Image 1 (cartoon, rainbow, N blue to C red):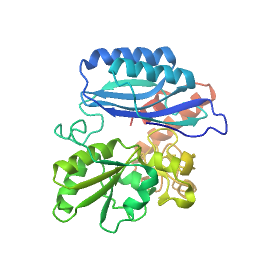
Image 2 (cartoon, rainbow, N blue to C red):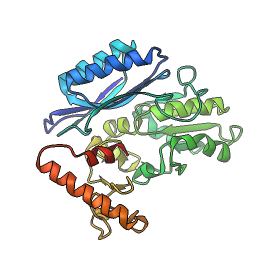
Image 3 (cartoon, rainbow, N blue to C red):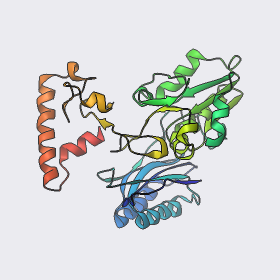
Length: 317
């Protein structure tokens, strides 16, 4: 399925989030071919490839982006790649990366394979009814810093720091004999596919997950009908988006990588590129000085129209 957000401001850069579970082989050769296509078409962002499929978010000028996606499809043999489009004023990524991984989304077990078993997809138009069922266990499969800035009303926050912790959270808190119906959601849908496979393997009977994730829901459901509260964290320079996948006022703290809203940015403890109210007390003087110098060099590089090494390193972190 293909989801495209409107572009009323005629923004020049198209951003594509895509993933697909499919058994792949000869990964090194595929990586080289895809990387060459990214270079040819000026694509930025990251694509992960593994024996279980592909996952990534990339950006480029519209036709170049479509050419790159066609190249991915040709190399992998995935003829119809599910994807979600949005728009940006500039590339939300600083460079292009194609990486081979054991898993395209890491749950920590090779036995969990959505290519073999997966939960029931729920379209955004049907999601409100699903999570409105009083017998439904509604789980947010994302990590704590993502949940903090937004989630669905009454959804359970697992308070995980990484997706690897999700199986332990489920096993310690829920019983398939008691919790018959489970609905899950995540940013773009990929974690839910793997989480739903895990839940079914654990013996949970009826497992549902939001098709296309939160981003698809925010794009398709009008704000006045929405059960979403807050904003949705995204893993690029946009930091977070709201209804209609519109940009928000969040920025990322370079000290602790936490998303910060306007109120937190107004705090005297927020120093751009250095620290924020969440990490100011834990920052050593040495780290503050190092970060301050890095930010100074990044600002200088920006005025010269180049990307400073420190900015690349912060992005990688």
